[in-house]
Image 1 (cartoon, rainbow, N blue to C red):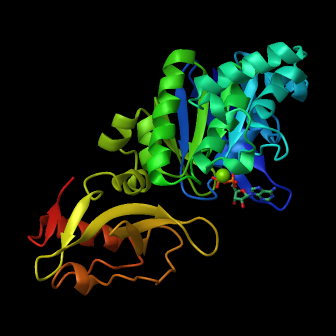
Image 2: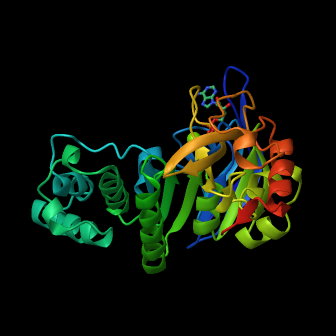
Length: 333
Ligand code: ADP
Ligand code: MG
């Protein structure tokens, strides 16, 4: 297990990225860190493998203080997967994966056998072995990234938004694969995402962070949904409480689209609502930032007399609540 005891990270510029974190990520389980952009998820994760050193507090991995390990030795027991798979472009997929066993001192033949085994484990067809990273889709590259992280058979796996850059359909299948892998391998996984749906789907337990690096709630997904600790958590997980998949009809009764959350923005990732029309996502309103006014869809398009588009999350929610109970907003979930 991984234990954070009073862990704080302050960067030299005075930013408190993580504020007095107390949390136990259970052994053999998936713990998800979720929260809006900039709330300290990545910093929390990177402190576990000492890519970032805590300012105060202690982190224990399987009972041992991480500061008692040499970082290189520590990292052999901790796999790390990030959004960019970071593959060697001029090496084949098999060689990319075999690199790790080779570094661990296995001979070439053993390393390649191990690599082939890992490729199968993460669902990569054998014919991918001889290809180069550029010849793989984003989803396939992420599978290679996972295979590489598992190569040393580490008991702990840290995953930082590994599926955020792939399209939603592929993302779903990668999530399913991760759950399957986990049921086979029983690793201790800490998985970071800003996507509450992904958190709820993957997490045995979910830690919701708020801006300022404060842990707002740490519970099983069902508890987060049914008993949010405060308004922030309620609002954050509330996106999943009936609005999603909600179909909207225009004033003349034609289906317009359905609601989904999005993560886009000119000034870096930001999360908000979108209306999906013919598979295309059109921004509706934003939950954080609150400044974007690029609503391609206006209130009048959606609910006669209603006011769906709003840059303020509170009134957006009330508008959605109103739409839910109005005859022109039709729940199809
Ligand atoms: P998340 O992964 O949740 O988006 P991060 O952990 O990356 O958030 O960042 C948390 C906060 O710390 C943010 O305000 C970010 O700007 C800040 N931060 C991250 N890295 C540094 C750094 N090296 N120096 C100063 N501030 C940083
Ligand atoms: Mg991050």
